[in-house]
Length: 240
Ligand code: MLT
Image (cartoon, rainbow, N blue to C red):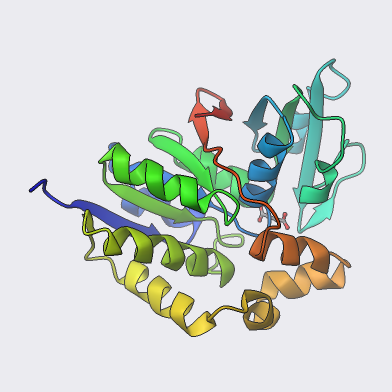
């Protein structure tokens, strides 16, 4: 019987240095909306995604042939960029074969914080493929919730609870992480109607105030699933 692998949950990008071990596979989740956008962009044919930390880094690529530059701060799109951070930018859009340069408030920061590890990104769009990959990967796992500017958010830990619960049920993983067990309890408490449950979430309210409720609906209950797993290679995400 193979020894069980360990799994833990980190609640915010800023706390990652407490979990960093240089060997675990890190699963980054920013459910509303960065990792849902990343899954959608790859589904729609984007070739690579370069997550960057600043608006200036992203603007370097503005106007370059074959590149799309997308930026979000405080859930809002930024003037001067091709896109904001809605998954709908990529649906029925001419993005086939393009390279997306993306900077968001928390999600691209979380990816950067974990870049010394194997990093994959997850959302409800590709969760089934992520589960199958992690079961075969046979490595310890850290689920890195992006949170909001260093604070806990509701939606990322609910996703982490969904993913953790399935992995623990496989009997290939074990955990001693209270954040993980709290995430599972939160997921169970949330039930099946995440859109309703998250009506109290700060980021859902933020998106609602910007008339972006459809983005929230999409990210929580995506109409299509994908088997694409974005993995960080150097400075960019590619299709595993
Ligand atoms: C984030 O990075 O926190 C999110 O992607 C923000 C958003 O898109 O609303």
